[in-house]
Image 1 (cartoon, helix red, strand yellow):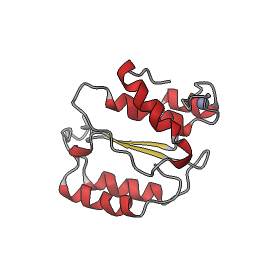
Image 2 (image 1 turned 90 degrees about the horizontal axis):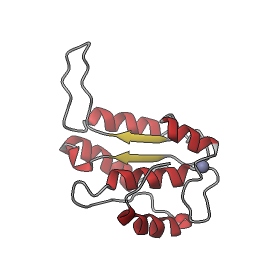
Image 3 (image 1 turned 90 degrees about the vertical axis):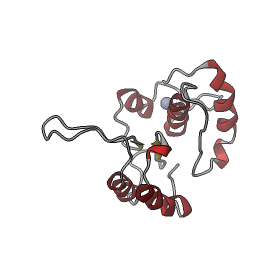
Image 4 (image 1 turned 30 degrees about the vertical axis):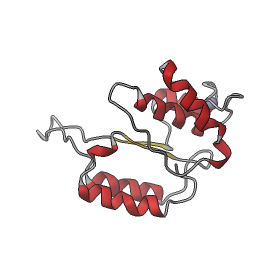
Length: 148
Ligand SMILES: [Zn+2]
């Protein structure tokens, strides 16, 4: 399970209280260093957990939580600025490029693998360039079912 800063716990609790009516997109906004990527990951774990605890948080014990802890859950997609490649000499990108968004769109066209829900984290969303943001816009307007 993700360790969460104590000041983010009330936000997590509030969002999880609406689990039944979870919106298809949630924007977490705040200053750098607040721990928002950890909050996004805690939300993802809670939404993907097979047997959440009474508060709605992930149990940390089920198959989905085991996959999440190992970083191998097939229904958690994290988009971050591109990594470099030592073999090809390609430099790391500071942007989330349109190719990554196109790959995401193809992925979301398929049904989630486990539990009927898929979670996508875009971190940070302001790393998207204009083309990638425009490609994502269509997805946000008409989200495939089961995707958050
Ligand atoms: Zn679990």
